[in-house]
Amino acid sequence: MSKNLDLYAKIEPYIGFYDEYDKLYDEYLKILKEYDVLSILDVGCGNGNMLKKLQDRGYRAEGIDLSQEMVSISQKKGVKASCKDIADVEGRYDAVIAVADVLNYIPKESLKDFLKKVQERLKKGGVFLCDINTKFGFSEVADGVMVKDEDDIFLSIDALFDGETLDTHITLFEKKGELYRRSDAYIEQYYHDIDDIVNSTAMKFEDSRGISMFSDLSDKLLLGFINL
Ligand SMILES: C[S@@+](CC[C@H](N)C(=O)[O-])C[C@H]1O[C@@H](n2cnc3c(N)ncnc32)[C@H](O)[C@@H]1O
Image 1 (cartoon, rainbow, N blue to C red):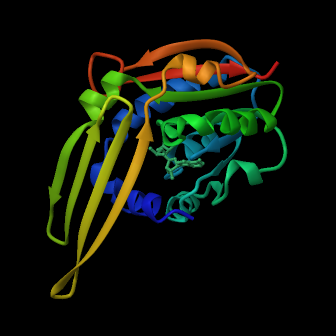
Image 2 (cartoon, protein in one colour; image 1 turned 180 degrees about the vertical axis):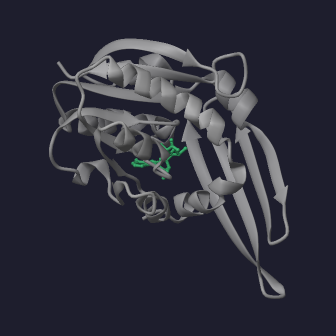
Image 3 (cartoon, protein in one colour; image 1 turned 30 degrees about the vertical axis):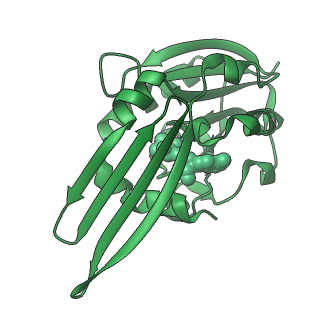
């Protein structure tokens, strides 16, 4: 569905940071425990690590992602995932989650529509949990250049935050015999503050908490909503 997101799926194992992501997942799991939740839709489920944790804890969890490559990685972990847009999901869930800056992939002008679709997938009283990058997270953590030079690959991730948008250029060279194959991708992420999200939905804003994945300061904010 998305060539750019598919290349991101391919390079994610070279970026790693799995322990840091586990820290974020633990926060979601703690909050979910406070509610009466069994069925969960994970929007932007990525590599399926969160889905696996949910499944192992007895939740009825399923995921969707716009990247077929990500969905294939998820499915290999034995979780239920499919490559589709939230507009094509049916049924209602006790909770919808969008973990690890999925909302930052949604342009400001599309937030209202995306959040409406989230709400339509929630039962009455259902919970929506998501996180967004803080300005600090974008400017001090995500912004910058990362290079991996290993035996069979050369990877460059060049991210620039201009205060509103994070533009990330990914270039991957993979060794194929004597030659290297080059792939390029471009991903845009959008900064949203709490008000951008709260004012774009009819769901009731419950609470927010700062998450420090990569530093002592909050690089993400986790937000909770209820579908009254
Ligand atoms: C940073 S990754 C996070 C993945 C996963 N939630 C995790 O915790 O590792 C963001 C994911 O969102 C997916 N994505 C971006 N926009 C999306 C959308 N509108 N609907 C579904 N998935 C989306 C991307 O393909 C990518 O897998």
